[in-house]
Length: 312
Image (cartoon, rainbow, N blue to C red):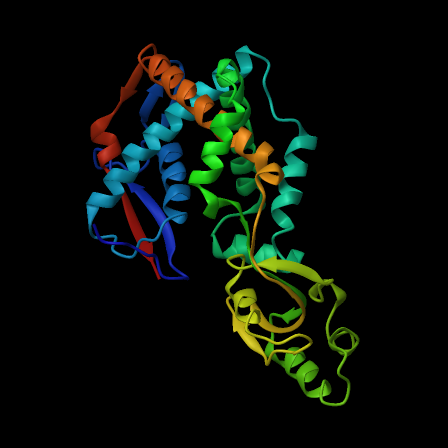
């Protein structure tokens, strides 16, 4: 199958071509008493499309597959929420905020995080809803899988020996990072560094503190711009680098090579991984059983008429 990508700047919308009247909004999906109209279904589909790479909207095959995937997603979401309500399982505001802050720590600043959301074509509220659903799913899955057999020490040791590559501490670097959406301030920082070798104090003369990060340890794969910094020498300052987020200067402060972690160090991690596998198996069995008990009604004709339209 082809890989599809919407070019940046394309606006995605959906048309419901129903009986020649664009103002009708029939129910297209019903799970027990919960209903989704064509417009609601289209909005969910739009969110799903934004998470994928699509550039050929003339081919109906991937969109039709996405519709089927969306129906499965909505079914699972319905079952999890209903089961959660019945068993008083919910995600508190404190839990949600803790999860959000943990994710944000992967980004060097608030501005970079905002740009990340913009490039994902989503907003904060939609993103928070996604995080909250993931947290609820995890809690429900853990509760359903609470009867899973606990892993024994011998199993954990065997898992460690068979998966040594999973338990390596990745190479890390300690960096100072300065960035800006515009090139001019970063260029001024670079030019001034010829007289003053202190990147941070120099950058403060031209750039807001929110765009000057504290020294931070980073691993490969977090951001492409950081991966480039692994080639720098200790105390070396990069030239001006560009990324989708703007213009950057990075100084390498320290390096830590990759290393194998001992079994005792990762024993708890292995225990949780094996337990999660068993919980997932119980959850899948529960999900299959519950899916057979509910009533699902689909307006196949109306769903098929939900088309995608791109506007430059």
